[in-house]
Image 1 (cartoon, rainbow, N blue to C red):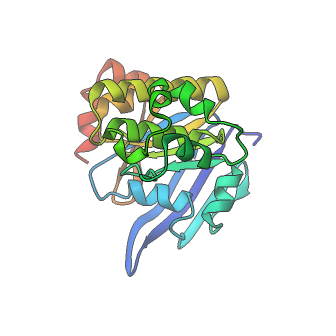
Image 2: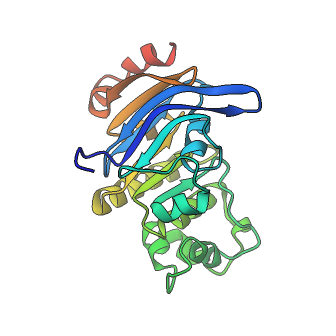
Length: 233
C-alpha cells in the first residue's frame, strides 16, 4: 500500500456464541514490522489471530492485507494471500516425519532445505516421526513449516510455552533473521517478556478486546518497568 501498511484492522468485532471478545479493535502492521501483542489472559489476543487467519468469522469491522479485504475469506485463501499461522500448542503431525511436516508447509518445495537452514537441529532428525521430538523441537518444526512458503505475515501464538530458554532465544533469533532478510512482518502473542522484547519493534497492549496502549520496543528494552503500568490496566 502507498501508506506503508501491510495489515490494517479497523473496528473489528468477534466472539464465540453469544459472547463478544473483540470490541471495535483497531491495529496496523507495516511491511517487515515485528509486533508483539501483550495483555492478561482472556483479553482477546488469540481471538484476534484466529480472526485474522479466517478461523473465526468477524461480526463487524474490516481486515485488509495490502489494501484488499480478507475478512470473511476461508483460511486457505488467506494463507495463499501470504499469511501463515502457528497456533498455541504447536500442532505438528506426530506420525509424519520431520521432513514430511516441512514439505506440507509448501507442497511446491522440492525439498525441506529451508526448514533446516532455519533450525539445523531438525536436519539431524529429518527421518524421525515429529512426535518423538522434544517440545522445543516441535515448536521449531511448527515455525519452520509455517515459513516454508515465505509468508509476508507470520502470526505466532505463545511460541515459548513449555520451551526451554535457550531454544526460545534460538527461535527468536531465527525469526528476526528471516524478518530482516525477507521483509516478513510478525504478529506475536507472548507472555514471555524476554522473547517479546527480543523480537518486537513495537509492543501493543490489549485489554477487554481493544488496543489500549502501545510502546516502542527500544523504549521498553531500555526500561522494562514500563511494562508493569500497561499489564495491570
